[in-house]
Image 1 (tube, rainbow, N blue to C red):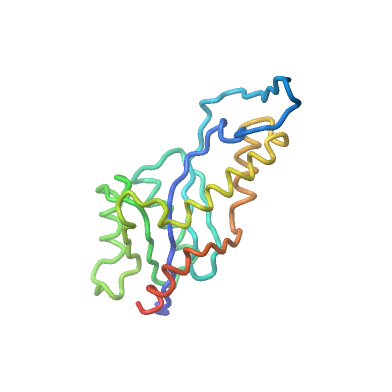
Image 2 (cartoon, rainbow, N blue to C red):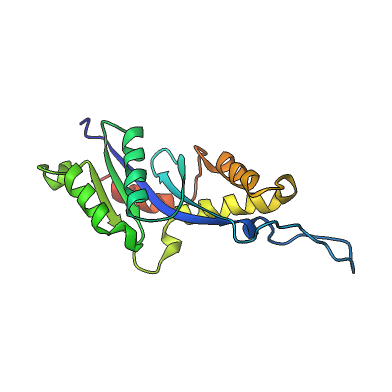
Length: 185
């Protein structure tokens, strides 16, 4: 390995068909209707923000679980094959399930902790404001709300969400909270 460390903040989001509406302005005393075909339509996304280059990576998934968490970690590794990864994430139960623990044990097998290929660190409990990926999700959903009229189907909504967020660079002030800490690792 090159010894270079790539640090990601990670989170999952569940996009709902209803997320596209938010608030709309209409004529005074006139009802404005926004057609929603299936309010229960749902898409889960895994997202990771590279805290050094501030690029966001997004992967759709059928749900948040151990299998999909491992697949997302593998995707991040494929993007950075010769580098160590540090993933900072929340306390979702599937981040710590047997499948994820077994994967991490296998990928780091025989290595000293300082040489682990993948290290996972937890944000403080009940503190989503610490995770810059929460800000990315908000930007993505606000974008959908501003462009609700362009998306007539949930497939169009999902496509719009991915096109807006994936590989986009985000520069939030809270990213600096982690860079000063991780540079000394």
